[in-house]
Image (cartoon, rainbow, N blue to C red):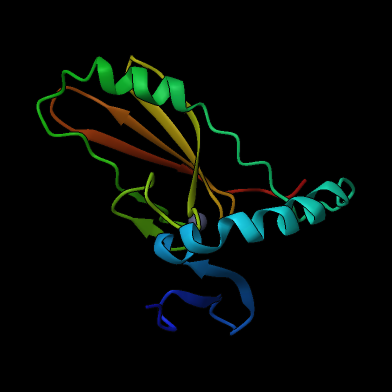
Length: 139
Ligand SMILES: [Zn+2]
């Protein structure tokens, strides 16, 4: 059985609804029915800029993991010092908080904070990770 924990509104600090969280359990139960409805709306909203393209270079990330030879375990947390967003595992957030922008086997991984659009760069060295943040600037 499902409870109201399986579907929850997500609000920003001003109390404005920014999205809806659906648990994977509930999603799997309803996706076949809901997907056609979503597809219909996505298909007619080409000019709708609120639909974000969530393309991530996941293969690059997987390659990066394959060649992991740092002296610490794989780390998936990301912190945005600009707006305070953080996650312990960016691959598991629903909805996403950080978008992977780049990853390479030399140890550079960068993300975009989806809350404030800052660029977060993690440089992996043998013994430590160095964080850099480039706040988003409007042109
Ligand atoms: Zn941020």
